[in-house]
View 1 (tube, rainbow, N blue to C red):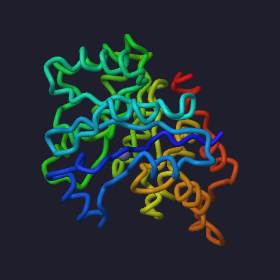
View 2: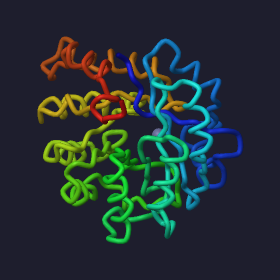
View 3: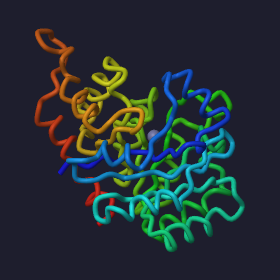
View 4: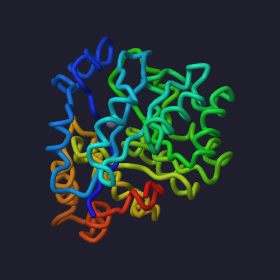
Length: 277
Ligand SMILES: [Zn+2]
């Protein structure tokens, strides 16, 4: 089983404004991921989560309907996560409609793109709705490149009160909360319902090595989910960067990363862990 828990669909025109310009500055790429490109990325693997994106504050809008239409082409392989801007007054209702009408199976939210404070009590109704519907929440809880985004809303520790309030609500902290990776690990370690994904970390090899060592030393490597952040990286690129992550330690006294730890991450059964199937 090789399952990519973090992939995007970005059709032409869906990434605009601040988001598009900042992505171009940071990654020197046009952010496009068509169904054909996505299909090529996950071909030969067992499946993927595909994320919608409702972030008007920073200019990114990938409708739930588009994700639903695409994932319906590969049932049992592709799983769509809805996105609802928590600032919308009727966010809980929008989430319920999205999952019931479009057969989506999770929620993606991102304080640094949607500009909200996770711990504001007014957003708890949205988390309660996800909990009621047994939908995992994937959080982009880490930094990003968009100047307009709320960096101070994006620390992993912000999620600890939510994890304690909803102990059965499964949550994933994307990108291991970079650059606050040890803070992310501390949230994941103490809350049995919180996981983390390593998507996009392979682009910073020294940070990636240290993130894996830290997760191993804290005993939470089994809570790392495998994901790429396509189109920024492909599934195969992420496998390759994971398999070479331990090279810094070779021939040195630095802590090694054992192959079985790496392979267990690559082969993580995320659909089962998150209850998607
Ligand atoms: Zn992403």
